[in-house]
Image 1 (cartoon, rainbow, N blue to C red):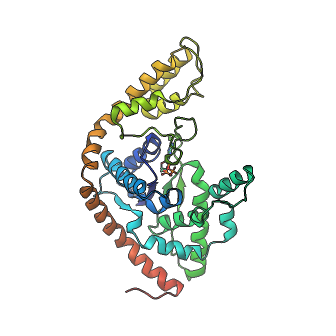
Image 2 (image 1 turned 45 degrees about the horizontal axis):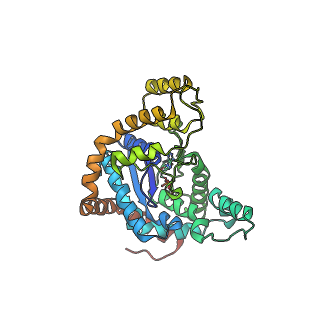
Image 3 (image 1 turned 90 degrees about the vertical axis):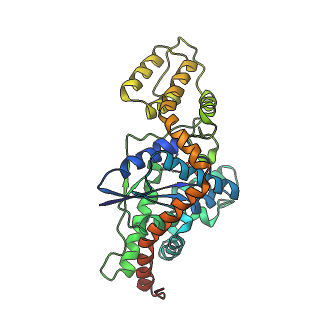
Length: 337
Ligand code: ATP
């Protein structure tokens, strides 16, 4: 079976982009009998971007409830909280010790932070933590610990996955004694899955505070957020360029190809932005409404989610503990057994 692994950072309230880009496709994949799915709440990753403990805790609950409300079956998926698996930071340290610093210097997320500092005429590394610098190593540990074969990612993450392969190869070479300790993971890019724009036109992202929340705020909140999406100044009656319109990108993520073609045609024929926003709301709402009730019920019972996550951690550690024993022995640390 193919092992598929994916995580969501617990840095804020889950949004339409997380849903269309990660949650919905991950649930579809988990239903295939040829797939063993490993899905997790990336709360160690959240510490890199967020120093608000309450936000992290709340986000973890919201993301877990969202995944389950959207149809994840915890009996089928290995569904866990990253921080419940102590083998992850342990492996992360082992990998850190075989990772070239030069490799991390080239990581996009780090380079983007440096470029921003330079553009602002600050010191290159101002405000950049070791967490941000070495986060591709933590990501490699997430993946390698479960010997995942396929990691569905957005295009911006391809480089980090290549780094995970590099690190795995180096580790295998140093310590494998002719045998591979790690499987080399492969990226899985789904061209059907678009990157959804946020309210300000940048990528919708928890840390940009530009999101349309999935369930928080209810149907009313969804509508209010859609009404705030930035559009150009074309008036009703004037033809619109669908391709460059954020509304069209969002609409396509929730509608059938046929409905999308119709929406596009109407925009090109001069449908007003107000009307387009109404149609967008109706389409998104049709998909989310049935899940919203389940979400509300789940979020009101954190104890039940806690039970699910505890059971998930046990299931995950049944795999991670024996592998770590092997790795400890391979590098010359004491075996814990
Ligand atoms: P953060 O701001 O903390 O990075 P994020 O909301 O950008 O958070 P992540 O938690 O890093 O998202 O990503 C979780 C999953 O959601 C990933 O698979 C990612 O590709 C997907 N995802 C995130 N934002 C979008 C988006 N705007 N459109 C499509 N998919 C997205």
